[in-house]
Amino acid sequence: MAKILIVGCGTIGSELAGVLSAQGHDVTGLKRKPPLSVPGPVSYVAADISSSASLANLDTDFTQAFFIVSPDQRNEQSYRAVYESGLSNLLEWLPETPWLMVSSTSVYGQSQGEWVDEDSISDPANITSRLIRQAEQKLIGSNPANIVVRFSGIYGPGRESLLRLAMQAPAIQQTPTYFTNRIHQQDCVGTLSFLLKRRLAGDELAQCYLANDDDPAPMWEVMSWLADRLHCEPPTVKATDADTGMNKRCNNARLKALGYQFRYPSYKDGYLELIRTRG
Image (tube, rainbow, N blue to C red; front, side, top):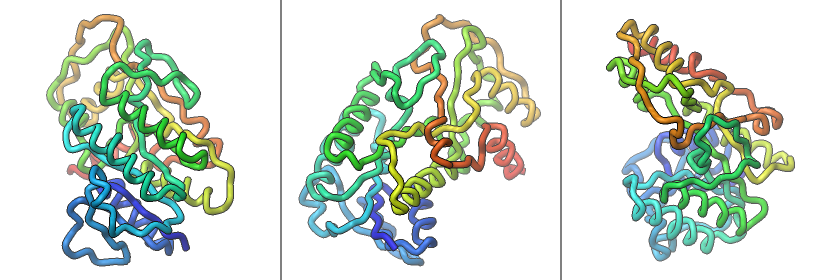
């Protein structure tokens, strides 16, 4: 049994806590506003990571910590609060604890549909993505045992924006091809629990893993497929320039070579299940 800290208990963090608890681990979740009453073995600590004093009641003997945060708003101030101040405070409070940080494929600035992997240049243009990239570098620099996992577009129950968009006959870029990379939220949880299992088994892990399904696909193809399954009007063609920001295809070969098997290897697997559950 390992003593696990999960910083950021939204949908993915909460589901991960449940999975790890069921495996017999001692799990603590850190939230600014923990639930008042939580059945089950997960315990919670109330803390705001942007304040170092707020961490005073947090233990310091965790076997592994997960950093799975979501800024309050999509602006520079909110991102600095968690990815600069928050991460720095946590690393100072738990300097010996190995960390696994959930990052984003938005750290790639490629815009021509290139394939990218963990060794590709990650030099994003916008400030929020640059702050995530700087947080990655800080985390890896603080301890060579720390790991960064870059998730692509997360979807699943409660994350159904593409389904809603598909029902509106949206204007979608067809040429040049604009690619979308996705991962079902259950595979997010699966990836994190898998990496913990491999670490506890003593396996040598890389410092970075790119986590998305096997099927980076043109957005036109995805939206057309969704519209057909939803029995609604297909998308219309959107004219656009050749340079479309953050247009890339993400290669998950490193994660799969380690042994992870996706529950939803294609967007078709995951979205078909979502459509069926909608009735």
